[in-house]
Length: 148
Image 1 (cartoon, rainbow, N blue to C red):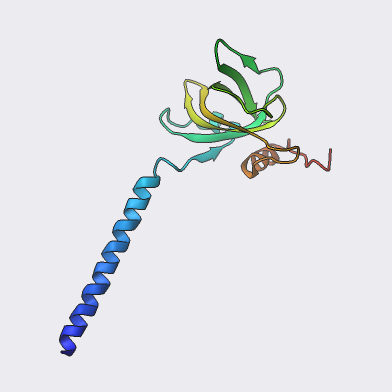
Image 2 (image 1 turned 135 degrees about the horizontal axis):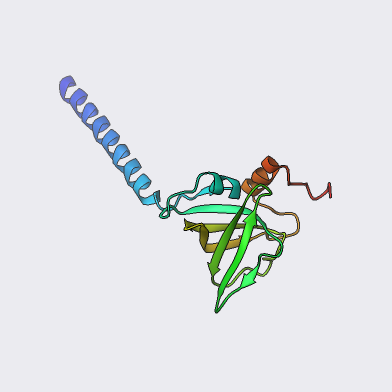
């Protein structure tokens, strides 16, 4: 009787361990496309990612670079003060999107142009994503709103 209980307990533990490993693997597999890493323009210029890699880029929309093209395509450059990356976006830009304002885009870097599939702009006068602030501070460009 004791031997049977011990064997059942070991079987239950083994089944639970296998279920945990399988569920972890399935979650990782499902999230592989949902994880987008952030890069600053300086990091993109320094070591360009593969053309099939989806990532996020953020910084300030460079002044004088916003060009509205044919149809819905918009071209502009995003900078962190150290480097600039050209961006192409087809779609409707957020209402708060303008030059010298913070933005974050999701997309791919193909042939020297970041082809954005999504553009996010700051949502109020003081907001800027943490990754963008860190990149701007690294370049010595960022000033806190209360300092300016």
